[in-house]
Structures are given as C-alpha cells and as structure tokens.
Image 1: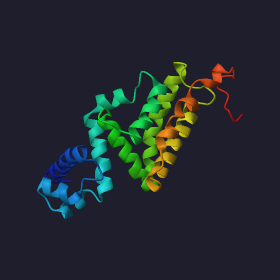
Image 2 (image 1 turned 90 degrees about the horizontal axis):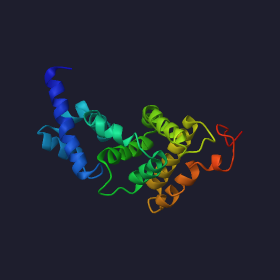
Image 3 (image 1 turned 120 degrees about the vertical axis):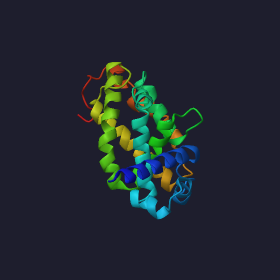
Length: 202
C-alpha cells in the first residue's frame, strides 16, 4: 500500500473514530463519514468493505492508541465486581461507562451477528477473561469449582446469549439476569466446603 493510501486510510479511521465516539455506531453512517473525510463513499469502501469492518478497525486502533486506559479497564482490582460491571456496561451504559467498554460492547454485538468474525475475535478476548478469573480466584473472590479458563468460557457464552436475546427480543430485561453473575461466579463453592479445583460436573 502506497504512502498516499496509508494516509487516506488513517484519515478515514480518524474521522470515523471521532464520529462513532460522538454519535455511537447505529447513528453514524458511512455517507456521513465519507463527507466529513472529504472523500467519496466508494473510496471509503475501497479501504473498508463495510461499516462493520470499519468499526472493528476503529476499535482496534482506539485500543492501540489508548493502551493504558484499556489495560487499566481489563486489569480490575475487584475481579468479581468487574464481571458484574462489565456486563452492565454492555447492556446498561451510562455517562460513567468508559469509552473502551462502549466500543467493546458494540464490537461483540457486531461479531454475534457475524458468527465467523466473532469466533475468530473470541480467541483474542478469551485470554483477557481467563486472566481476570484467575486473579479473582487467587484473591479468593471467585469460585474455584472449575478452572479460570472454563469459567471464562461460561461467562463469555452467558454474555453472548444475553446479546442474542437483546438483538432479537429487545423488550426483555437482561439486567435482571446480570444480577445473577455474582452468585454464579462468587466464591460460594469454597464457602460450602467443596474441594477447590473440582468441577461442579465432576
């Protein structure tokens, strides 16, 4: 890709980032991004095949540019509380929700609509969740009834299930189900005397 092409691509990304952050994904249109970037929509699609692809690239560039913010967000002091709050950030964001969480929630929604993309990107997020669960287990906040990796898998599938419901049945109340997170993953098994490290299914 030529230097000019790189410059055009970066210009589109910067313009799209500002607009997505200001308006959100649903209320930002590729025609408007192209107009703001002073290019044609056809040229925009030469670099980014769809609005979804553009948003995912915007998200990746934002994470890279704000690495410290992202690391702080995904390295919580209270892992169990973070699991609950992260789900709330996805389904019930407010003015205090970090931008990285808002963008991440939209990326997950896009990937749920496109299952192949989601399956690929899941591999990048799963280790982050596993590290959070491991930290929570080490701090005795999160159950040791299963491995950190196994719990991360269950948690992510739980969120995806809620997102699918939210996409197809928007009148449901996912927040009511989110309230179960602390009970699902809290350190109840060790409190009841179950041998740590033994799976519930064993």
